[in-house]
Image (cartoon, rainbow, N blue to C red; front, side, top):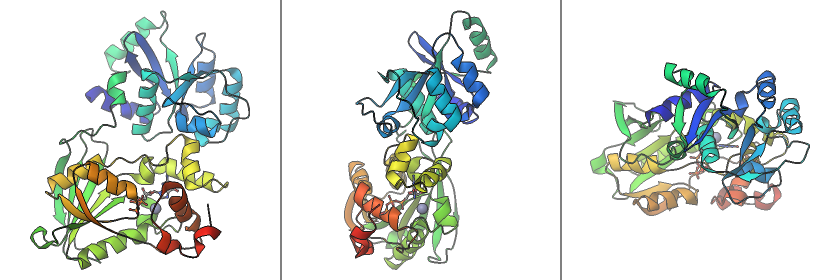
Length: 371
Ligand SMILES: Nc1nc2c(ncn2[C@@H]2O[C@H](COP(=O)(O)OP(=O)(O)OP(=O)(O)O)[C@@H](O)[C@H]2O)c(=O)[nH]1
Ligand SMILES: [Zn+2]
């Protein structure tokens, strides 16, 4: 995996990486970091570069496909759309019809997986290495200037590396809502993401179904009290509630923006300001309705020796994910923030589009504010 991990850093810096799938060897360029000059240079190549888009992005453009994504030749018209509107990077629909679509193969899926894992917009340009370029590419590979990854490895980037989460450090951190708290930091094997378990009270005194909250990071809400969502209040309410129940655990998961990362969440917010709801905005950027996976939460619970929980959530997916991971969810408790004029659309979309159990908090507003 070492090479893939290093490649992710290059991709985040906007550099291409070489993707190998048997005899098929291509350079993969993250679309979001290509400027007009870079795009023009690629468009002028004799072999048509391909644009790889996720199926969510394509659905938004009116193309429903079964594959995870598709590749399409970069025509001058498409190139103009990207250049003029920055269309594909920022979710605006390109004006023209899309040229021929080919269902994504392993290398295309790998390119998309690399973008998503690097928290970039899942869209890439791929170019085949021509005979003339081979020697130059080999020299860049040998000097370490260019990194090569196997498509099969890149496609597995999202599989949880079960048992490989590292417990790194811990400290006592008294919290306003729970004075007896400890933070334990875990690091994923690729070093990219860190998650924190906030252990409240003493394990020996917890209820037998341990009060548990899985909280996905939300910088804007958790730290700054953004009114666009209910995360900050949910976070504080969860800590207080766990303490009141006799202690338990809050897993603070590095899944900003439902797993799409802060940069993309801010883009999604801007799209929401043009009228899209929270699910459609993510889809316009190329993401599914919820990109989170909870394998790391299951691993953290294993490390803390917790097998039976009462879960504080309104999100049925979290219950299923834990149950599938072998954790018994003995009980679910609702956990609300306040409904405000700013977060009403967001909460309605969560209830109506993603099946979150929010009847109580939405109450009479249920139908009126449908997002
Ligand atoms: N992509 C995207 N993410 C958002 C938006 N608003 C909030 N989020 C993210 O949504 C996540 C909410 O996480 P949680 O509160 O743990 O989970 P939940 O799915 O709402 O379920 P609950 O357990 O019921 O709270 C955080 O990662 C936020 O950053 C949005 O408009 N777009
Ligand atoms: Zn939030």
